[in-house]
Image (cartoon, rainbow, N blue to C red; front, side, top):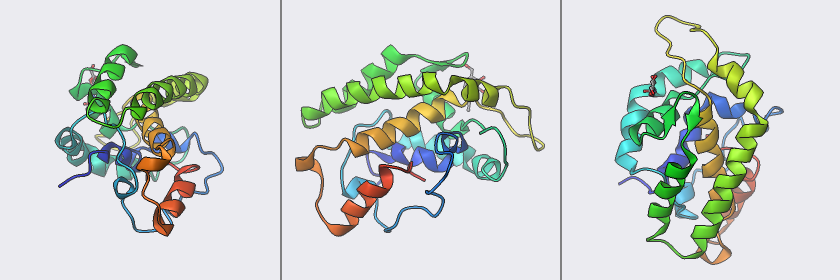
Length: 194
Ligand SMILES: *[C@@H]1O[C@H](CO)[C@@H](O)[C@H](O)[C@H]1NC(C)=O
């Protein structure tokens, strides 16, 4: 029912990721109404059901947060996903455990994905490290509306980066070639999965 790489969708909900795309050419969304998984199925961190549970719990708060200007707010959908696998604690993601989970997903996929995934993890953790001042600032925000839960931006940053990077690195022979997929690939080379 749900695409295996539904985690790509996590960026929909993640205000935190917008920060990394300051001059935002992405706000209008993808140019074609096509699901990325139909173009390329990428490795995923958790089962779709685990993602959906977090999505239903947090998406309304997240949508509301996305209308707030200023320092990007952390994505509770992503933090919830990380929590569901015990990957997140005290502002940090357990990189070794995250790597193991991705490698578990990769095991049943084409062999090329292994190195691609390891490289993506490396790149995303470096990117998050480079953005650490803004990420820390997001973690220190106080609620802007009654009942807002502040989540640490690290989870959304890493998950959104992984989604984009893996999709962008899809091996040519695993990528469905058609006009829509080509357009989607070009769009997602600049824009997260909104
Ligand atoms: C994730 O777990 C931490 C405790 O480690 C908790 O403070 C935080 O509220 C949890 N986040 C979500 C979105 O459930």
